[in-house]
Length: 348
Image (cartoon, rainbow, N blue to C red; front, side):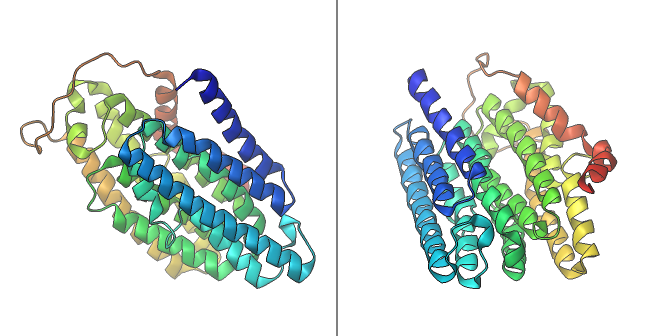
């Protein structure tokens, strides 16, 4: 892609998110979300592959449906209450509709079916943007809505955590596994949203760091399924030794960074008297942990010819920058000791 066009599209992505962040009026927030959607579409379809075009079409249709629902709900709210401000959603009908529209935007279960299919059709860089940056604007709106729909948010959160764990169990495609991982993590965030927005933001930040390092590892190895992952040890042995730690951090295993948000969320849910919800969420984390363990096993404990047959990759030197990967990997593995300091910051 022409670098000037790429720069304009990335600027558009940033601008769309910033407009949504800064808006207090529903029309402005909707406009920011639409800018986000329209600028990522050329990035998704840039390879002119049938799968990429199919993924782009699916993404456009779901995002357009969510944006239309959002606009309809905000107009309904203005009709019922005479208010266009984001903070002034008092009527339960538009409040529920907006929550569901934003859930469809970010891919929360049971409105998640588009996310694995779309992510599977994209290259890893665009997939990374879709899994991280595209979640920010809808999340900013959900955070401003949060006191109104407590039961709905808990149902969406639990369903997402369970389906995110369940759906990834039988997958062999890494991008689909990452999509289900995204659904599960978003479920955890939504679960604690109404009780502690600061823990939700912390979870979002750690999810971004862990997902960033995972996508960069797969990009460096040019891996899109488990078979190619199993041959990565010949190309980058040191990175292959570290990757299981990144994956297990995504799964939330102590003593890695990914354990911190899960620990704080379970603690907060228990404080709020929601022990059964916390138990279900913890059990759903075990499902996710299983498929991260499966990836770790395939990557480090199987060597050809004991794995399924896959084409041997060319051993060409990688042109990818390794500084972002090194930084995010260090953060993914070693931030758990900072938990007391972060907890102290969260209480302010």
